[in-house]
Length: 272
Image 1 (cartoon, rainbow, N blue to C red):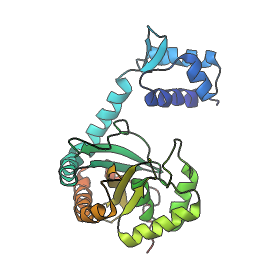
Image 2 (image 1 turned 180 degrees about the horizontal axis):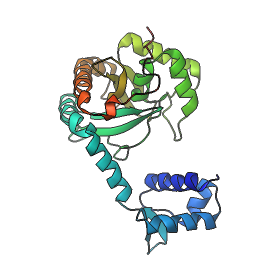
Image 3 (image 1 turned 90 degrees about the horizontal axis):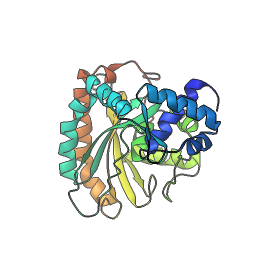
Image 4 (image 1 turned 135 degrees about the horizontal axis):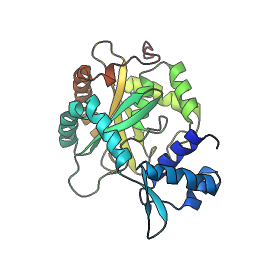
């Protein structure tokens, strides 16, 4: 890995995935850089208030500053204010975890959540806000891909990679042909499904959120929960409220400049 900017951003991303902190040697090893370079960049990040040293262990960890910047950005663009009441209502109806993701081309990023399961067995990841969605293995990613042409869907999957940077579930697709078949089924069904794919034991369904003015996808709305509870029958029951909630967010999105930015391939039409 070369380049100060690339190394600095990689350190921030690594520490974001390890909030308890990491030693300099672990950071250098994980990012394949000299320990001296990692130490120097950590010291500079510390001076600017983005990193702190946990004195008892000598580890480095992120401060709250980076998270505060992200929350401030989301608040100012109006995404969470617009969507949260709808997310909360859908979570109450479904009794499961509801997540909002927005397209920040070429990525799909989770930005909003509401938990409808109040006790017992539930899916509650807790650390996915701001995470880039893996397109091929997740319900949200498949919902977005299904709203695009086959050519653009293939381009996005190829750019991100078919295999996620974590251990997926046993049903995760292992070939591009599987992904394309999944997208054909999704378009026919009207909503995407990912069971034992993104994570073992988890099931999810999702639909794209479209701008009301032109129908272009701007994000996705998903419901996720334990596979033993979120069955095909239950998904069929939740399809209408999920679809209605996505349409509601799509209409409300006109109030946010973030959703109305011009995007690459905005004129892509969904394949029939």
